[in-house]
Length: 189
Image (tube, rainbow, N blue to C red; front, side, top):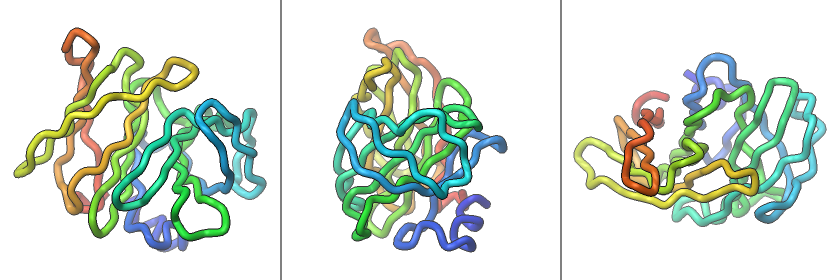
């Protein structure tokens, strides 16, 4: 449903879908900027939100589908905002796909491409590692990335077309901190 709304509005050119597990209260915007881990990213003027902070880069990495990425956070009149900024999307300035008004705990999203689906977002603050499960695929594990504020994030490529994706977080002792399903384009998300 959200993916259809983004496609109809012209967002996500070159992307199939952006889906956030935050629920009905989340807002979705696009913004432009450049930065490094721990730095602030300038606020955009046309995103429809009242930002009360600049966007801070909390994690960086590379996706085989989308190239270099940065996970960014900020505050707005809709609450905490989190998103992914794609640095190699061929635009003059990178695009940020962002959700605002997100609940505490898990806040996961996916971007689908032809070769891979990129799963990204926040996991519980004590999570050291995540396990990503999909029917018919081998389970993947990934280390979390600690943000300057102590929160934890992931950015992981999974097979394109994956359905029924579930992310489970574990603390340093291997204790489960819970799991969440991640909507993907293949699920109709």
